[in-house]
Image (tube, rainbow, N blue to C red; front, side, top):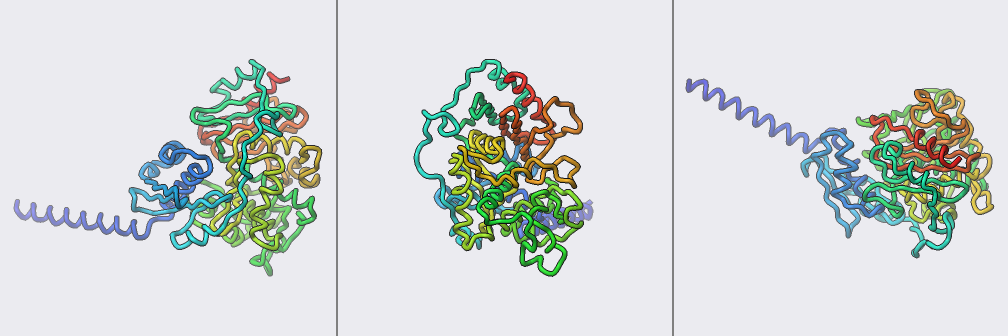
Length: 455
């Protein structure tokens, strides 16, 4: 019996040792999947605290942990308001990550050694001063919501969908209805995720109108000289048919999660990817391609400061998107496929720009040829995507029956973000929230109900 007890004690000591060694190994060399998780948490908390003014604990609980992988419930976050820094780790020690806020550029994932260099980047914020609440939207912020039938639609939780945070309806150039979820209002900047891609296309269109860029340009990056990637055009990137290999799947360590949460120079990472097909022959939805578009248009400027100031000066200030913050990575490349924060009313201003075919206050802001691309289907996508970073179909359209016009254009983003534009109806509907794809929400039902009411 004593021998058995001694043997059991030795086994227990050995097991404790193995666990201790394993724990020490994970702390010293955390798996990339854990680093993706803590990097995601740091970035989301940072942006929502410093851009949207939300409570860090609430963001960690509601935006990161509730809809995410169970391991995210072990993430702890520390926020340094004075330094603009958020640090995260599992159980406070495993897979540490950090995100830093920069004036005008939002938050970026950073390594400890990069913080001071990243802090040196900035862009002009919106000019100080209050919005004119007496002038009618979109010139000011006065809105008239007088249709009780529309208000009934916007009060229907089934139509708004799970965890809806903001809905704004624009008809004939005016906001005619809006609704907000608990804790959110007309002043809350919200992340559009991939709706940002269409904003990037609009920036290309503005640059085209200024004669600074040609969408048919090739030999886009020095890394591509001498190989087949030199044949990829800006037009191919805009249509998501460059042929580059890029895995857009979330929930694991893939190209998109690596780029967003592990790579500090996202443009360099996307440019390093190899081709899987010839340009123009295959559609592959890729946030990496939109980052490459940002990298390319920024290279058209003689200095980085002018490029960083351009979105605000050329687009946001012009159409009144005062709340808009287009975030950049740690090296200063705009994350043009994923990271734009703006209030729902400001997202509606952008939707109105698209509905007006790139015109604002009588001025053709976005070059007509690029606007045509926004509405024109990309051949390789079989009619699903356009040549200008937008969708021809709403979520799951091929599996559902909706009596919406074929001209309906969709800007869609992760977790249920959408802007629907029907130009002939002069109708724009913005819907923002935290609604994972697994919930199978269809904003088409909301859009259809709004059309039925407004006629």
